[in-house]
Image (tube, rainbow, N blue to C red):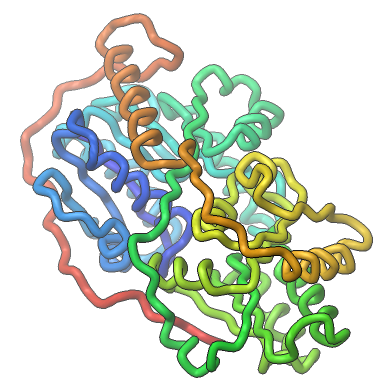
Amino acid sequence: MIVVVAAVSANRSMSGVSRHASNLVRCLIARPEVKALHVLVAPWEHNYVGHAIARVDPRLHIHAVPLKPGTLRRNLWYYKTLPEVARQLRADVVHVGYPAPIHGGDAFPCPTVVTLHDLYPYDIPSNFGFPKVLFNRIILRQALRNASAIACVSESTRIRLGRAMPELLSKTVIIYNCVESAPMAVKPSFVMSWDEKPFIFCVAQHRRNKNIHLAIRAFERVLKEGLIDPETRLLIVGMGGPESSRIYRYVRDSELTRHIVFASGISDAEMNWCYRNCDLLLIPSSVEGFGLPIAEAQLAGCRIACSDIPAFREVGGDGCRFVPLGPGAEQRFAAAIVACLGDDRPVPARLPQFMAKHIAKQYVELYMKLSSSSCGEPPKPVEGPRPVETHNTEPFERGPRGEEPTVVQS
């Protein structure tokens, strides 16, 4: 089986989409059914995705596709170029890492799978702004309708899809994100000057649904009320976004610059160190599709205080302190921080439902089912387009590897 994973995005550093694609590739390359695995990324993603995959295998090929920055160029690449790339690579299945505009009908020579992480364009339109959110909704619907199958990363996401687009539920399957502990823990360079001072960890892109403001206010409350060590820092790791300027302004106006550190683009090994050494993980999101930091924190034996939302309940189980949102949430999160700090550090969890071996098996079964359906066998439970003639042309050249992602601090 030849699998093509398309993960071309605009991100200049590690993001949820990049991490999903990297984890997916690490899962698939361990399966004997996969005879070749081609990963398609933008030129600016090639280095950090390659380092995140961290696998050497003659079946694995990471391609930096010839693409210039720009939303329109990227969307046209998915719609017009990706089907031809699939033909060049003789793909048996194309897996698109997030909802991108893909051609329907017989454009692809093989079935297509799209990973659905969330329904942010409907649930949190402020993440995109107007009128951009309208285009994101159109692309989301187009991608899901044209895909042969939709891989939802959680039951919560599938339920939300059923409310928004019930006609698509028949071609969905729930396959969790792969979550496994990084093999190493490396202390980030910017932590070296902290002299072993305590810190609270928050993993969140600067978007409205991440509720970074709520995390900062709860931290400010316990700090100024003397409920935690006065030298404690709040480390927020995540890409910048629409909320960045507002967040930075609040930190400056509240005179918290000495206590709050922002970083992005840190490696899996550095993330692992942060989980293992922080006092607790603080995640107050209002809407999520999965909750990757929560699972990673449990594997590292980390205390967790998070919002009480369906995706976090599904992923976190009994390993978190769940805090209701709404009026009074700041005080409740402050109390949860203090309560967590009084708990013993938990034993690292075993989460077999997120293990690579289990996730890879589910994906390979889905791919094989789609392939058999497209060859004329009864579809169980999804239906893909019939294959068309393929051509043996040269694939893209493999780009060079580069340096590790850099830490950016504000």
